[in-house]
Amino acid sequence: MLVPEYGKMYEHRYDCRFIDRYMPGREADVYVTDRATVVKLFHHEPPFLRELEVYQDLLAKNIVSVNEFAVPVLIRWDDELRAIEMTIVRPPYFLDFAGAKTDEEYQLLVLHDDEWEDQCVERVKENFDDRWPDVVAAADAFARATGWVLMDLHRGNLKFADDQ
Image (tube, rainbow, N blue to C red):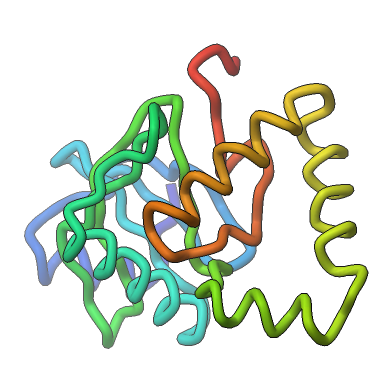
């Protein structure tokens, strides 16, 4: 497994080892550590800052789940390395908050593009087939409980207990 240089710096700085690459992503790569946690190494600062903001807010509100969906818990972060370490969660869960919007930001999107919500629902229908009403209900529950609107809903970021 090839670990980027800033990942090696994280391992050294926080005395851990990356033992598996969990998944590559558009915004970041995720590694499993020898402490049974995951570290998300971001490629760019804006998604790192947003995801960190959401995790800090969830931690401050003591939110570890919404309905039956688990939410990873923030363990530590490193601004210089654009890294976030968090707990591992099992389905059902919500993941990946780099694209999340505050309710105010979401309302501005809707205000400036009256087709925005319809396009979001269409993407959810494409990703989740007949489960799409459950996804919309879960995302609405998340927004009500946290104040954050999830914008990147797909099968990697939202899993149900019975998903394979």
